[in-house]
Length: 280
Image (tube, rainbow, N blue to C red):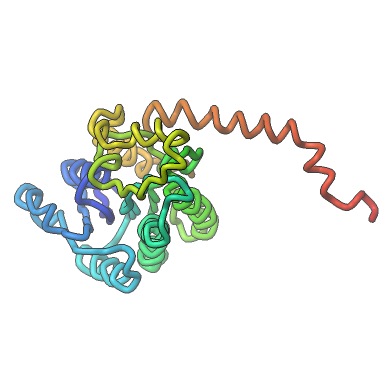
C-alpha cells in the first residue's frame, strides 16, 4: 500500500507535527489530533482533504473512542496509529505532587492506552494496521529528576509489548519508538516542573540545570528525519518491536542492556537460590 491513513495524537508540535508534515508531503492522509486542532490550520491549504484535524484530549476515553470512530468513518480506514501525545515532568520522586504525578500518568500512559484501544476495532476488522506508541530512551533507562516520566514510559513499554503479542494474529503490528533528545520543546515550553525541595539542591543541581529549557532547541535529533524513520518502519514487511531513534539513543541503550546482563550474571547464584531445591 503506497498511500496510508495515519492517526497521530499530540500533533500540534514536536515529533507529532513533523510526522504530520512528512506524511502529507508524501501523499498520505493524516488524521491529526491535538487539544486545539486549530494549531494545524496552516497545513490545510496545501493538503486539502488529506488532512483531517480534530480536537482531542487523550485523557478523555470516551472522546478518544469517538474521534477514532469518526476518523475511520470519514476516511475509510486507519492504517497507522502514532500514540504521540505526552509531555515531560521534571522533579525528583519526592518533589512531585499528587496532582502532577496523576496528570503525567493520565496523559502519557492512559492517553496512549485509550488511543490504542480506540483504533483496534477498526484495525482488527481490516485485518491490518500498525501501532507506534512513542516511548523514549527514557523507557530503556532512567535518570534523576524525571522519575514519573520514566514510570509512564516504562509502563508504556510493557503495555505495548503485551499488545504486540495479542494483536499479531489480527495482522496488526506494534513498534515501540524510543527517541533520544530531539529538537522539540519537550525540554522547553511543554515541560512541567515540580517545586524544588532544598534538600535535593545538591543532588539534582546538574539535572535541573540541564532541563532548564535553554537547550530545548539545540538537541541533535531532527524531528523530520525521525518521521522518515517511522515511515520506513511502517513500510517494512518485518517491522521491529522497538525502534531507537538518534545517535544518543543508539549509543546509550546497548550500554544499559550490557550493564543489566553483567549485573544479572554477577548475582545469578543468588537469584537461582530462591527456588525450592530440586525434588522438593
